[in-house]
Image (cartoon, rainbow, N blue to C red; front, side, top):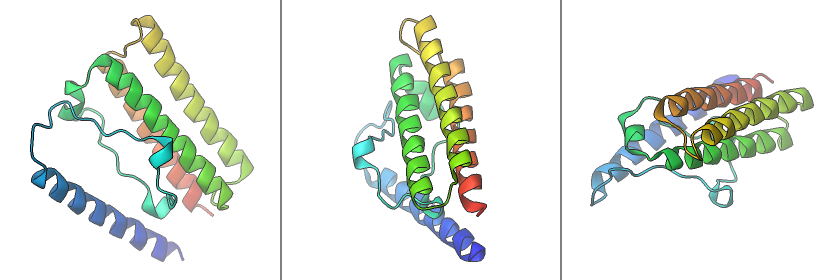
Length: 151
């Protein structure tokens, strides 16, 4: 079963990266400043550990074109996505109650840090704080995946 999960995750990753590359290459127009944005309403219903989203790594040049306000929106959106993943994985039995509590705590801590950074900078998040927060979100993503696949 674990081997199937690993193969499914690898297949999902390869498909998503090749489709994303083809889509980016074929899309007309200027992409400068474009950011990926999730809404809870348009999240896929099959967001299991094997089909987890692939995010852009912190420090990517794409992030340097974002305004400080867009950085806050992106962090909030990513945390909403991770919160949804926690809920779905818990409902499907991939996460037990203790794991769910711990992951939600991590999610809240990152959200609180983003709120503090924004409050200190008049509602905006500076680039260095954003990159640190992106690292924390990435760590949360790994924790969710690790806990959900250690059944």
